[in-house]
Amino acid sequence: MGQPFFTTKENGTGLGLMVSKKIIEDHLGSMQIHSKLNEGTTIEVRLPIR
Image 1: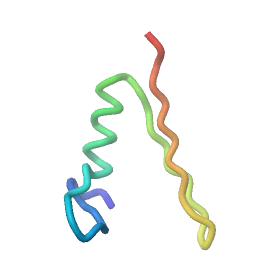
Image 2 (image 1 turned 180 degrees about the vertical axis):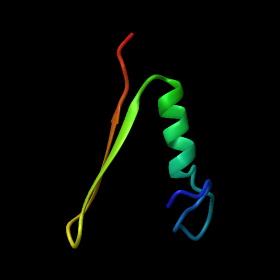
Image 3 (image 1 turned 30 degrees about the vertical axis):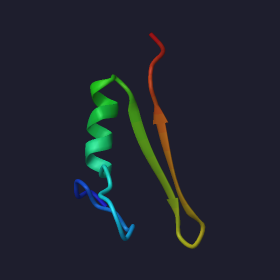
């Protein structure tokens, strides 16, 4: 999950969670991951309004 350009799709490359996190942080934002076993995962992205 933390590898750059990881994807589960047959074609293409994913942007990667760590690359995405870096872009968000470079824009003074934050990312939180909430996960529950057998329920799913939610990724919360917060970016400031300028």
